[in-house]
Length: 199
Image 1 (cartoon, one colour):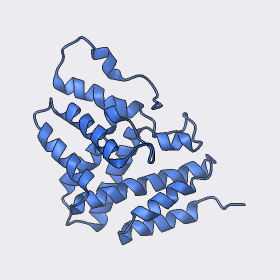
Image 2 (cartoon, helix red, strand yellow):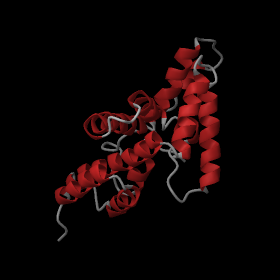
Image 3 (cartoon, helix red, strand yellow):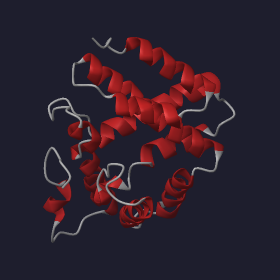
Image 4 (tube, rainbow, N blue to C red):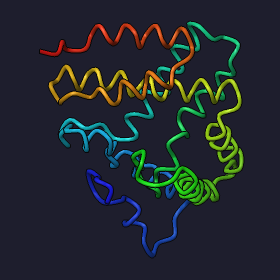
């Protein structure tokens, strides 16, 4: 069962008819309520645990700053859209922790989620195409956002360790495996120096 800060905002729309933009915003609010489940399972308290929407903001900001500094050849409009939309599959599927189910099943649930959310928007097919591009991970922008997604996790893990939320070595190992871009690896290597020293 997914841990959330509060029940879905969409429950307030049950039996009503409203504008698609309002409905999609209420759906997005599920990401503001949805805790990042992996942190909770590794000892981070609910009071300190980030939401999926907070993670999404971190990914998008990192993508903006890093692309401006190091990767001007990447399509920045696409990067920002991809950063903002890449977690929309979790609105209805939830934040599925690795190992809970097969990747095909996870992808199918998230695909159903984004199709459900985007179908009412005028540019829904465009948004769906961007989400699919991220999931497929074949374009330069998708590969970049996938790495930034993990780097953001490593940054957050460093903060949680500094706040004495436990040993989050597993998250650093996952970040380490995901990063191949030298500029992102440089940041990751610098993070290691900030980690609390083990006794």
